Structure formats: structure tokens, C-alpha cells
Amino acid sequence: MARIATLPVTEWGDDLREFAAGDSASVVEQGIIRVLAHNPALAMGVLGFGQSLFASTALPRRLVELVRIRVAFHNQCRSCMAIRYHSALDDGLTDGAVCSLEKPQEAADLSAAEKAAIAYADKSSTNHFVIDDADFDALREHFGEKEIVELGAFIAFFIGFGRLSAAWHLVDDLPEAYRQDGDGLIAPWREESIAVRG
Image 1 (tube, helix red, strand yellow):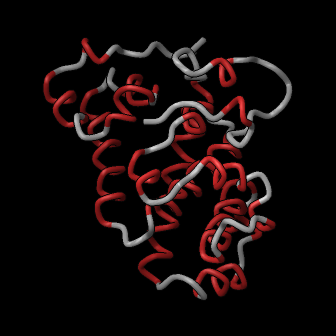
Image 2 (tube, rainbow, N blue to C red):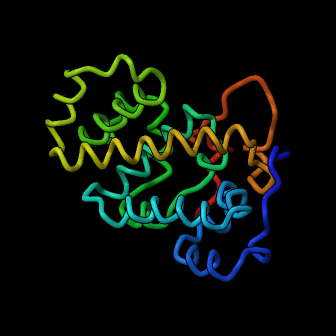
């Protein structure tokens, strides 16, 4: 059960509903916006920042989604793991690619650029103090400075709001595999866990 009450979309003001209309995954499935809706200006600020990240990036949508899902695993953000964005599916994201996130550096279906981005996201999510010049050298083999800045901003966005969502335990509307309590880690690459298409 969620630790903070969600606010149904029907109770949102017109401004927030209109602002969020283009982001159906956030409105319908992603519980964090339904909590942030208690403060509509804050909710619009978060949505606006996310929308500006996606609108201005040169990074492939599939790569961003793989990074988002991998960060969600580290955060144990169940709502983040459950969502798949249509734009990423349209850009070639498959269940097989998501399953490759279990051992990304060994995956044959992930590109070298995707592996470098995921390695950076892994360190950012688990121990950012170990990130060093070699990590940026590895990124520069595939990305320019602009793309590295964008990747860092996406990772920060995913880590921060994913951890907040996980702490709020926003699982009530998720598929059963994500609502179960237990001691083990939930993973988006387990067959029973791949569910929502936002």
C-alpha cells in the first residue's frame, strides 16, 4: 500500500490535466505524478523538466529507456520498472533488450554505446564516488559532450524521482509481480514482471 495518498486524475485541476495530457504514462500509470498532484505547481514543474529532457535530447529513445529501467532496478522503484514508454518501443525496445539488463555487459543484443551508458548509470546509481576519468573516456567513444551531459541529466532525474517513488511505495495499481512484499529484489527482466505498456 502506498505510504502517501495518490490523487485521482479526476480530482486534478484543469491546468495540471492539460499540462500532463501528452504524458500518458505519467498520468495513468506512474503513481508519483498522482502524489505530486497534491501540489499542482510542483507536479507541473517535475513534468515540465522531464518533458524538456526528452524534447531536447539527441540520445536514442531506446537507450534512454534501457538506462531508465536499469536505474529503476537499482532504486527498486517498482512503478518505474513496470512502465514501458511507447516512444522507446517505437525505437526498437523489446522485452529481449529489457531481459538483457540482467547482465548488460554480456548481452549480445545491446550496442557498445548502450553498454557504456548502462555502466555509467550503474555506477551513478550504486556508488558515484568510483566514477573516474576512465568512465568518461568510455562514454566519449560513443557520445559527444552534449550527449554525455544529457545522459547525466537523465540519470539524475531517474535516480532522484525513482528513489522518492520507491520510498513512497507506489505499488497499488501495478501488476501483481510488483506488489508482492518480500526480502528479494524485484527485477524488470523476470518474465512475470514485464507488464505495463505506458
